[in-house]
Image (cartoon, rainbow, N blue to C red; front, side):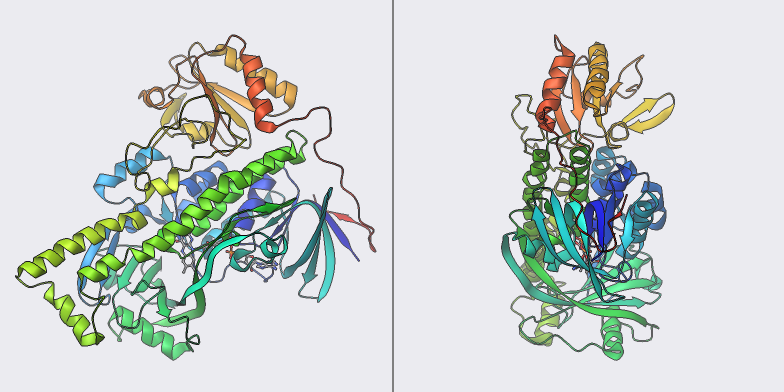
Length: 604
Ligand SMILES: Cc1cc2nc3c(=O)[nH]c(=O)nc-3n(C[C@H](O)[C@H](O)[C@H](O)COP(=O)(O)OP(=O)(O)OC[C@H]3O[C@@H](n4cnc5c(N)ncnc54)[C@H](O)[C@@H]3O)c2cc1C
């Protein structure tokens, strides 16, 4: 049997697998990506691409391409709740940071803008970047099984075109094979929660709906209609794919009953119901069924196999966290694999992937499901929860307009319920407050800073080790650069200031001694980089002569308040702790070549 060899085998070409491929190729790691189907996503699912994800894509040099194709933030925000697009509007919410009172929070937090990019357009960008940087890709290739030994993993895969199986020998495997992950099942990852708690139908249409939406541009429109219940939300969704002529309609079904039979006529009927005008020409492009899940893995890896994305966190689209978290999982693991495979860090560094990412997975599954439940407040306020039949439902909605104390109370109740939806649509803290606790972070002894505002709604910048490096704009010889632009690029970054010259020497010494790139920048007047607005001085939480060490994934690894007596020794101690290096022995054993009929093919 033929055997392919690679350092990392990636199973699944969704957002998690494609971004793993991109990051590994960017870091110079040989990787092979296999995908069961013949191409990438053919229907739009994930759209919301949050600031953290765009920052990561900025680090990879593809932010410009993403923003060019995406719908920008200012067209994402006037989310309406209505009886149909042509019908009555019951309420409107300012979402995704577009309210003037929130816009500043988003602008202050990141060099990157939240945007809306369908998976059908994001995936080809990731794919092209990965393949052009070295990823080997095999479509129509299905993962079948794997076996691990202490030196690597042998996976059996099936070429679906020719119907033949062959083996891939890899040092590590990434299971990014989505919510029915066979890899996760095969390595025995324990799951908490429940799959298939509700059913939904996705219908992709082309229809020019400009006249219904241009005055309230938004990513989402919620339509209250009897029978439209999705996943307990009780509403149908008209989801913008491209403004304003391509749409994804989401319509619920009762999962305890057999799935609905959808054909083009039924899909058109649902579309016209949601639009509220059956004279609008509609072209149905696709329809498919999916289920709402509430499940997460409590472990992400076994031995040399690591799972990520929907393989380990399965939840409804509320909050738009799925593909974002998948890409962020990949960013967390890729630099660690690169260092371990290069022999510059001990394999135990990889344990931190699970330690850091499992709490995030659990959090987003719970958050997304709670966001569904929080629609209940809107239904209560509108008197829909206990409505018996359509007539009663419409009468209750009409009663909201009455000049009675009861109607006034209901209107207040509705405003409060809409405020609660900030936890779904303006949850900036959920997106950016990811603080890691693991052995890949070295404490400076300071206690974790408490959040001074609601941690789900508001981002709290801090250089506390484990947190994401705070962003501010700096000046490099007339060019605006973000603190985050100084970091990333697959290397460690050390930021210091006036009086911190010794850190610059230390970074050079450590880089030369370990082979791990630690690049140092001094920030301040007369330094490499200036801080014209004084923002870094306010954010850094260390003295000018101190330092902040940043990991390749933009999270703070360690910091020191002021210059040390021996900066090289101090930085060396920290790097040793971070990388768990055991210099006396090789970190990764050489690969074992499997006996192969046609000889091993090395993928590099
Ligand atoms: C209606 C809807 C709206 C959504 N909106 C958002 C949003 O706004 N923002 C957001 O972040 N997320 C959103 N999501 C969630 C998002 O689509 C997923 O979280 C995301 O696609 C997960 O990425 P993944 O790479 O882990 O898995 P997937 O995208 O599922 O990719 C897994 C890949 O693995 C392949 N595969 C499976 N088994 C095998 C095998 N045995 N061998 C080889 N290949 C295999 C599959 O074919 C697939 O290509 C939405 C989801 C839905 C359904």
